[in-house]
Image 1: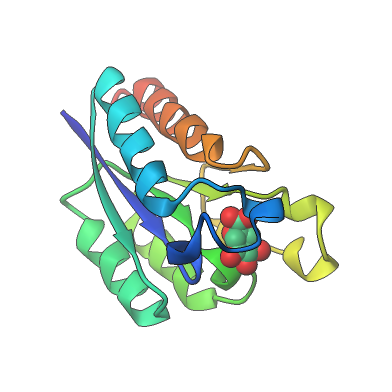
Image 2: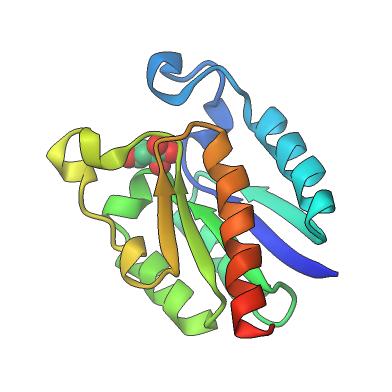
Length: 148
Ligand code: DQA
């Protein structure tokens, strides 16, 4: 069975109560449960990890090499700042789908730049919790096309 790591960065542990008008009322636990359920229907086993610490996210990306077939990454605010996370994704050479709950391109200009987007297969944003489901489908389609 294919394996994917769903990796969430800073402040995403607060989903459900954090600015619900922007990020919705779905908690991270609910997002994870939705992903597990959907993943089963498309033949994926998913692992989840969330951290507020850049180094822990880097370690999780490194550990995914050789153990996961792909990564779904919501790097939170590190999206807009972290060359280290960009380098880590480029280094492990795992197909990665960038995810955001909100449409970062419709928000403040500092959110329009994503270092992550330079090294991923593609970006999905603006669909709330459904962004993660769309990302799983996108990863499955990519692996199908690659014959992986
Ligand atoms: C976010 C968008 C980021 O700009 C923000 O810093 C987040 C969440 C999103 O999922 O919409 O923490 O990644």
